[in-house]
Image (cartoon, rainbow, N blue to C red; front, side):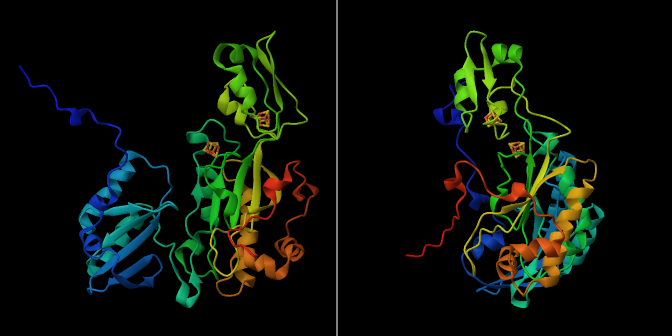
Length: 366
Ligand code: SF4
Ligand code: SF4
């Protein structure tokens, strides 16, 4: 008879493995003992350790949502050039880590042949910056509440800004992020340029689905503005449209509350956020375009606005100046004038709980 499995074999919920198990040997050996790093050319970095060891990084942009076939191709390159070690950055870049400098050019050739452009680095000592890849959310391919697509919009924007990814020709750091609904799991609230999918119609309760699939009290209490109330006689939910801010939270709670509207859903654009405390405090992005249509497959209206902001800032900013700091220097009035973006009444913050949107910073002044 087979012996009883020991208790440890049943342990499954143990979290991710310790990251140290997966570090390349050269990084493990020199952990915490790096002297400096340099940018050798766009997309290629070298880090030099106190021991004299060097590790070379080749950075390439990737589309975030990848097939297993694509991941296998990337892993094969990692096996061939990097002893099997690879990392993915938070901004959807792949980083190949090499110890042999002579392999860099061959690796770049093969990576680019697969369709992943090498770039996205910056050299702060020379004030030469590339545009990093765009952080984005799941979009139509996966999530249930998007007001716009994610991958498709990002692909269209990055195609238009491709040269800035390949070349370090920008005056400062610029982070672009996209979230396809107000849940904002793309953390777009503090980026230099942000895009947020916005619904513009209240949910349309489907009484039958609500009765069959939803828990009415928790759906009602999930509304942040108190726009929902239960109708327990009819066993459904009533929406006070005047209080609804179209956040889609009730649809997350209950599939009987859809708020999709292909004509009215679209994208808002924000600018002037940053997380860094360097030079000026971190700050939230501000809405500069309240709505643009959802216009697949290339979203031309959205691409035009992003390009106008980026190119105007790139032409006017001082070295290291981020979009928020550039706006501070020239003023919002000039920002709208120079970028050609129309100022609309919807940009004025009249949210009825405005204490949540007051100026917020991690820097305190007593
Ligand atoms: Fe889903 Fe909204 Fe996140 Fe997009 S931002 S992936 S729609 S929760
Ligand atoms: Fe409330 Fe948001 Fe649903 Fe409107 S969309 S009813 S604000 S939860």
